[in-house]
Image 1 (cartoon, rainbow, N blue to C red):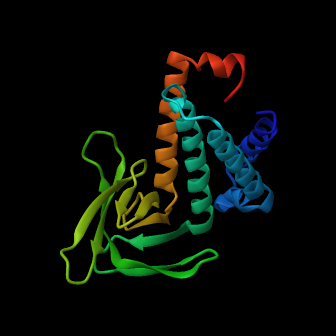
Image 2 (spheres, rainbow, N blue to C red; image 1 turned 45 degrees about the vertical axis):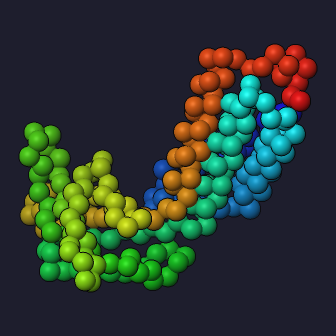
Length: 217
């Protein structure tokens, strides 16, 4: 435990630094630095070793689950840092104009695997005054699929997520869109759910007495 505390504290500082907004999202580069990666690996290995050293008993299950959740979060974050692709662009509100590939930073030209068009941009009819974009996804040989997208509600299709980031409020002629594919996102979500549930169980039922009085066995 003495080893994990400073490592975890350092990782928290990195995460706080990475959460400070910077133009172009450059702050996320900190998560790809060698120091952050090494710290994350050390913490993951420490949790794994600690979990393996703990004799499996039913009363220890929440502790094992907490370790598993933390490890999954670290794995998912690592996958995201390596495999995530993200790009921003402007798309005219004309379904005749389609795009199927984009230039992604550090990834070159990446194909979406389908064509994308902005069918229309309008004000949502729900008394909120929000702008709503309707995206049209086209796969050859398959019926076109449409998804609605709001400023705080991204659209998803075939593993990609699309965010409405800007728009033309005068003519509603174009929209700024950010496209992102993050294969580690689901792993992180599963890890967070497991960790949250495990912590809730530990707080409610408490740790086994042998772990409190004599340390982990």
